[in-house]
Length: 122
Image 1 (cartoon, rainbow, N blue to C red):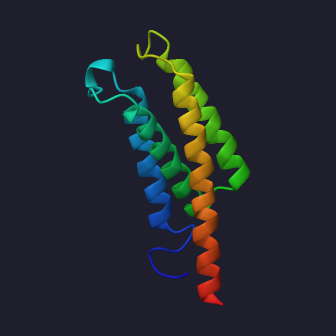
Image 2 (tube, rainbow, N blue to C red):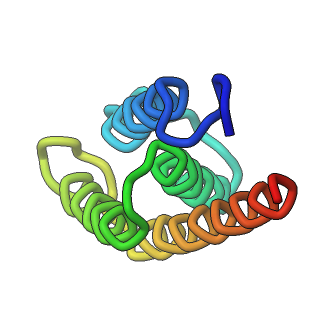
């Protein structure tokens, strides 16, 4: 694909960088900056955040295995840090599960999108 939406292009790398920055803000915000929400909404946020990280990471050209491994490590590390006095939020296995599920879905979405694109290019 040519143009601004091409894989490994500047827009793809920029989108991934923005997703990473947003994830840092969401995952490590102090408790006073986290809005209250109905039960379960935090899992949707975690799932969506990691799905976007996986999708934009693949678009930016990061290898599937490397990206999956790093994102799951990032998810686990963020939960561990949230449970410390540094971040002072609650660590949650449920959040880690939602993060990991988001990674899987994001990778599958990339596979679906890239296979559709290759069929239309043929």
